[in-house]
Image 1 (cartoon, rainbow, N blue to C red):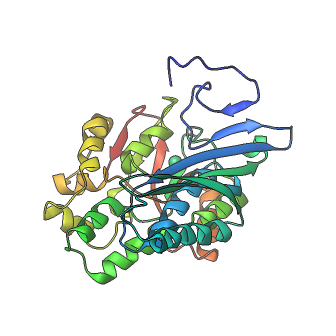
Image 2 (image 1 turned 30 degrees about the horizontal axis):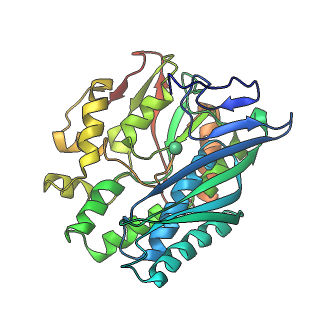
Length: 321
Ligand code: CO
């Protein structure tokens, strides 16, 4: 956020005055305690208002999990067309959000609503962490394995659902996955100890891998065959079903992707698909990787896979093999 007249404060561990783009802001309260804060909200991406509330809340809370923080409290952010929408719809959205806030072990402290022609919902979230145990997104080490904890393709499959091209089962799977908290995955990560973490959201898999490389110290080798994708995602892309954000991400990040091997244009599109409430991307040392996979398994994290590794060169590139 260059150009902002920001106050420098030594207690700011992550924020716009610190030279790193993190998932959440971090403010040190004491040597043992840091405040971790984030906010996100958006327009409905599924028809069911309760499920939309669940997804929006899981998505907002995800940035706390990516930093290794424990969610403490949340505030509702609500925009609602008062004149033309039934208040029960909005109540269902808020109940969906509350369901996930409680599942996270956090509490709702309040919120604010405005009249708006287009419904929007999300949360401002606050979590706690030990200042020395914050998991940053760019602190991976060469040789680390990269583990992903949800399948890729929510943008593509959600677009297919909107166009009536997806089956009921596909629609259900993608909605349930987006509504799943990254809580268990984050707990497994904290148990084992990770070198870096972020969550996959709007910039897609490649975009968020690039975020992990923002210190320009290493590259990441990505194993296409190991990446979990939603069933149907590739078929939808082949049928020209894709969200606009995918092409924006491709335009922005494609020069960072070095393709070594035979991949079709459609294969590559999957890597730029913007995710809503995506999984965690965890960088973990080789020796700790097995323990992490065992912890993810024990915690019933549905889908997870080692999708790549941190390499010395080429720096700041995703090498696709
Ligand atoms: Co994030």
